Image (tube, rainbow, N blue to C red):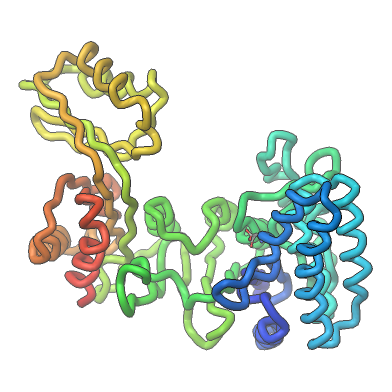
Length: 438
Ligand code: ASP
């Protein structure tokens, strides 16, 4: 029997209208048994998310009049949904308690979590599902790390006896029972944990886009949606800056081989993106799956005659980075050359130090530092079995007059990474997309 866990993001639950869409989606498929809501998000461009309003409440907890003015906005949002949909719940009573707790000195974690808590109560009453407080299912250690084993155990034990439930996203509890939250966007993680805990067949992540785009839609017009993506590809693309899911939401389901489907609440008829453990036979029409990248890298270029034959050279260079506590992204090498590609944030304030230490420890012929590099990854399982992928990529960049400053092909043949000037970043992404999909 299939069991589906559905997580709905903030924009999917931002208003009564959105609540109706969610109910239709749940009722359209009886295997959708467990629902994980976020707090109400933005209804329009300049609207404020409930979690951001709660963040203001954290600041105003010792100023009752300022608190009241922000809290009344939160009150209006939940009351409006309740009134329009005629939901049978005394949400005011719950909100009064939250406000009292805030004035009584509640923690930041507690205050931020109440957006999901209140939305969960409202949604459970609207759907006729049981409300199960995430504080009783999701456990954190004192230092803020998730206690994965206890969490999965509690979810399994509790939900196996409940046919249909709403579990609010984004929070759980510390060992002393007080509320703990994930980092922002953490409802994705709750959804993934519930999926794993009930051993569901599918994790549906409902949002306001029809899936994972092949490239950033702010850079490429009319960009295509990726229909199918492996966990490994997702990891590469997310690491390089593509954001749809919270990073930590991948592991619980990936390790159990459960697929994720990213769907659009406003267009449920769209297929969305299916994220699967493996892709055996890549789609011959799409050699590449997606393109993502980041700006702001520094390159330390080192040259030394006969470097290739010098045993321990790379180790000595890397020991400098280790000593200075700097992590690197890429390390392309030639016969007598080596480059360290490091994000600006990592090397900030340490460049001189690192260079002096390399000079001392490795005795190179030349060291050069280049700044303002952007790194772009073109990702896809299809690459390993197709001839001419790099030719297409490089000629696409050449056609647009983009100078490639670094090339690195991942050892898994899952990606080709190029470094270009920061200023060429957007143009390069468009050129690569055009070369493969144009
Ligand atoms: N409401 C929280 C946020 O805005 C968590 C979430 O939506 O996943 O980050």
